[in-house]
Length: 112
Image (cartoon, rainbow, N blue to C red; front, side, top):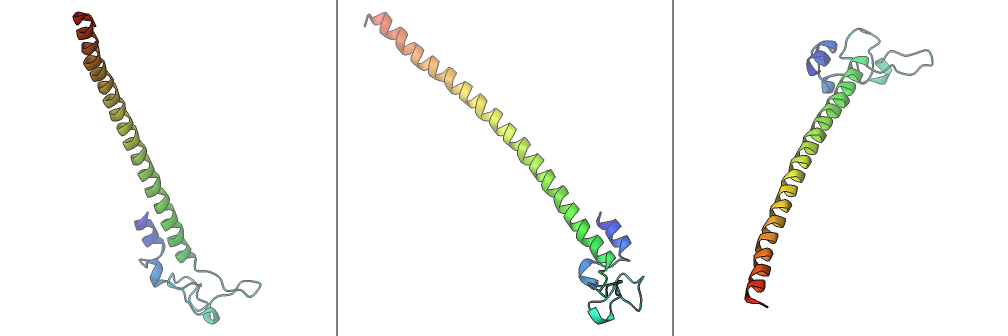
C-alpha cells in the first residue's frame, strides 16, 4: 500500500505535501500550505490536496490491517493457552484421583 501511495503522490510523503491544492500548479502533488495561494472551489473555500488525502487513507487502512492481524494472533494465542490450561487441569484431576484414591484403599486395607 505504501508503494502505491508513493506512486500516487509523485514520491512525496505526507509531511512533504501542503494542505491545499496549489492554484498555480493544480497537478503538483506537493500543493501548498498557504491558503491564499490555494485553488478555490465555487464557494471560495480552499481545495484540499487530494494526494495528501491518499496518504491519510493509506495510513488508516494500513493501521486497520495491522490491528486485525494482531487481533487474529492474540485470538490464536488465547486458544492455545486455553487448550494448555485445559490439559493441565485434566492432568491435575488425574493426579488428584491417583493420590486420593490410593489413600482410600490404604484405609480400607487397614480396616479404618
